[in-house]
Image (tube, rainbow, N blue to C red; front, side, top):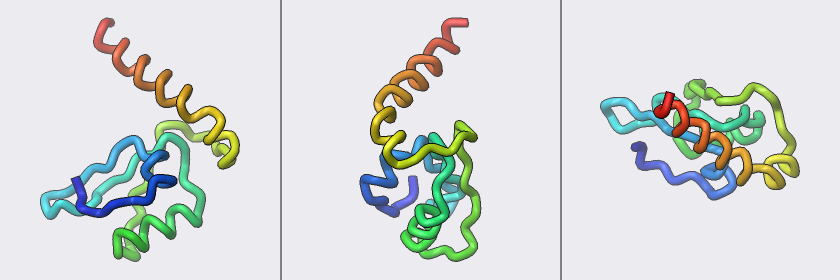
Length: 88
């Protein structure tokens, strides 16, 4: 796991951070696509102006209000469905 610590408002939107052998972020997977300003903030924290390996589970864009209103349900549903895959 990379050493970088993201602020709570970003960490909350991140599903997974994959790292390379140097313990640097190699891929950041979010629930929904990050906004351009969020991407810039992450790039700044990573101190890697060439980082462009952002991926998201869902392709829909959501507003900050929508995310804040539904994030707990989305995370729970995704987690529950992910565990149900093991039962199939």
